[in-house]
Length: 406
Image (cartoon, rainbow, N blue to C red; front, side):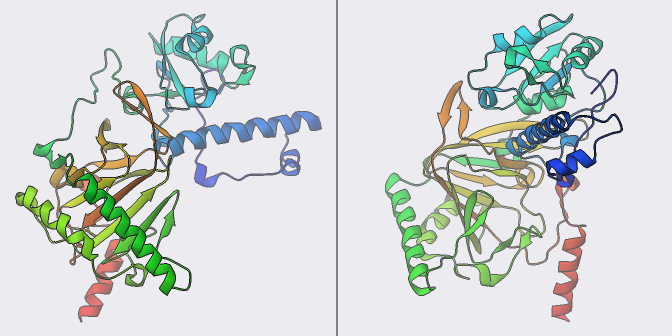
């Protein structure tokens, strides 16, 4: 971006990967040399890859959700971060920006492929961005920096740190008063081993009776298997029963389902859908809220294998509140009410988590999600931001249900 121009935000659903001949044909009238055209194409490709990486890491669909079209005193360096540059230090990044008036500090997260530079005033940040954006940087072996403005709320969301002088914060948290219940060591180590053994036995039986295939489905980088009902990841609703491992819940799940109701009797429910998920190291799931109209008020998640950090985000008109919870092996997470309907949850796509200041490598993790299908396909909750009650897909499902009843 040049001068006082606002950033050009790329929508990655519309990106096309072109070859060099296409780049040559699209060259402007200045008659660039072939070498210059190839280099221009390569720079454009690297820029697009940097944006796409940031979107993937944060589980966000569009750059419009991250970057501001108006100048801000906070600059995001999209393609320079700890995981992108290896042993990046705050001191090295500060050496790039220190020569500009008003520079306050650099922010580097040890598990993120991007970083930030913060200035006292917006006008001072503009000077730095104009001079550095899309230009070779000697401190980083002449790598061209990709810079974007971010608002205080987005900075807080991405770093879990509030901007000094900002009235926006991430102080709001989830607890039992808002419908989040967390029970550590809900099952014993022996029960965990028994459940994982049952899952493997079911898989072996499916392969032996199914002509060499099992009932697992790959969704991005994780694997899922449904019992009772399936889930359609296109419509984000209850799916085809034929895609379940069984239309009954597995017998080995009965004991911990009954115990779940005993532990939290105020939110006891009779589930009819169980989903097993296997997360290889580095796999995750983007921010989402379980469909309001597909499932009833309460859902539960049993974690096994190794720990992982789950992030929660509450969208708002002026800010998005972000908080995290470390899901330990053998723990139970139950969401109901506000925590279920008004907060999105996600597991970031990355190979490490930063927990209490220490980097923790991820290993294979298993989870079992327990839900009850909403037979009416309707929701009258008081959280419209994330409610799908009026969605076109849901209206078609209700019309089909009414036709079947008639």
